[in-house]
Image (cartoon, rainbow, N blue to C red; front, side, top):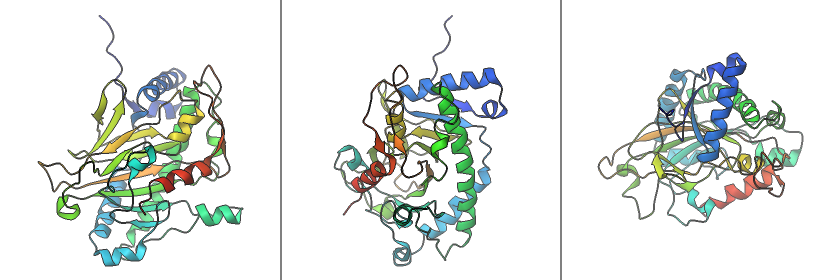
Length: 324
């Protein structure tokens, strides 16, 4: 009898990787390599992040999103900034050249803010976070969460280096002062958004722009779908204890397209559950400004991309999804 096929989007228990068992680490690395070649996605459990912390962030953010628009507008930000992104701010499908109506969501967006030595870079990428006064607990919760995400990202990047057969710090050495981002995405029902327009999504089809994305999501009929060559658009598997991990464009370029930048979308509110409301916590891993992303050569890499400055690339992508 043949062995069952590994699912295109597998679930990986991270605990054996963290405990350092060589055989288990090797098996995990092989599974990761295969999953990222086919879909660019995987699920991880055993990450050690308190589920209660995630629940408390959602409760605090929900209190903010329930405020009147006039109050939320005090915190309005541009795409890539810090604060509130209101309805109509983004159309993620634009990043892959698809003109769609604006995405049906609101976001609170935060990022790293520790000063950088270059004042020009500091002004563009390390502005202070803007914390809503009406929900004071949100700052403490998010700062704790971001600390956990930074630790988890470094574990994942070491795993990715192992999966490519490279030195353990191949990626992490470029993350000493990264410009990570954190979005709390609120997907309300049609009583808030109105009926979806043709071709309108909660988030339009796109790939992420940076290195590694760590997503804490809720299951729903109007939820996450991922693209695979074998199956086309598929509902993403969900485990409430797991994080959904996908790699972004810069990581795909770094690996010479050995790994896929995970294409995905979030469906609009479903016709048979129009009041469905979901919330996602999305951590976007990025590099230290000035990192030169060069494709790993063959036989690991498949395509030799022209080297790019990580943050020139990121800025172009952020500008591309901004709705004027």
